[in-house]
Image 1 (tube, rainbow, N blue to C red):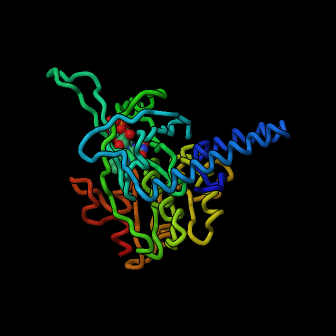
Image 2: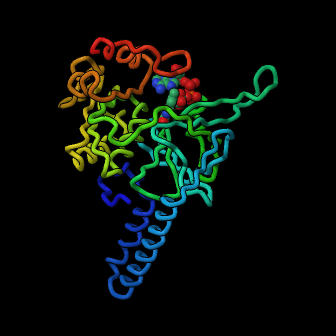
Image 3: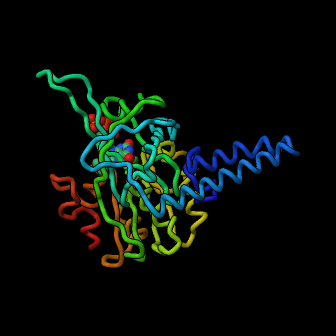
Length: 313
Ligand SMILES: Cc1cc2nc3c(=O)[nH]c(=O)nc-3n(C[C@H](O)[C@H](O)[C@H](O)COP(=O)(O)OP(=O)(O)OC[C@H]3O[C@@H](n4cnc5c(N)ncnc54)[C@H](O)[C@@H]3O)c2cc1C
């Protein structure tokens, strides 16, 4: 279980840790018997948590089904920035994890009225859940979703209230990561393309045996669009020898000290392993992919490499 709250996504991280803080505070103020009462509660909760972690590690039970959409109950919604929220969904009773190999995504589904032909208008979109392995058993997973003004699925998810359900199916494996497969990996992300990078970063940093170095280059339009900047900064501070983060914005504020404009050849050369010496992961809007790695194949796989990465070999 991670204990450093400074390196947790804002107001998320471990719900159990939040509970600990909530209980611990009044105890400190009231003192005396109340303090000891709360200490006992904390110890009981810690023992329960340790038992659940052990059970989850020894006998993992996945919540996802690769063939069927299952309804997941929304527990909590928290703002991440002006257009993006974190949606926390409960894992059903009896399960110990979502069941998501790194790196994978899921698909969500809902019916948006009926089509002209009278048939249901089914909307299906992929999302990348976030579930930090360092937290052990939590009983939840998160989706970090940006709202597009006319986007049916992102608007639907943003309209959900705690207690509502979302139909989810998966996992859909994108890349099977193995610890220490590479000495260094470059992570190039644009906007919500950060979510699969987060899966990888959390997987690697939660495993003390995994010594893979990572350099994340995270591009956004403006500073206020950068998702979870404090979280990534805290991780870089906590793991300086293993994790570095660089930010690029198209519209820099006065005094901005990061990169300006798009992710270009210069920063890719600096941040990514040389050809044959590691791996580069990229996720972001289509025009970013086209410029850096070439447009995706019709089946959404990488397809033929193009762009800057092809030029750099
Ligand atoms: C593998 C994968 C994982 C994804 N994971 C996440 C995630 O974790 N969080 C998240 O918020 N989104 C994620 N997405 C994007 C998501 O699937 C939807 O495309 C997005 O939420 C918009 O869906 P929509 O139905 O609201 O709008 P749509 O009708 O699909 O699109 C609305 C408008 O927004 C544009 N648009 C859609 N997606 C993007 C984009 N990524 N960048 C720029 N313009 C775009 C469209 O071109 C259109 O103009 C992921 C996409 C893929 C392929």
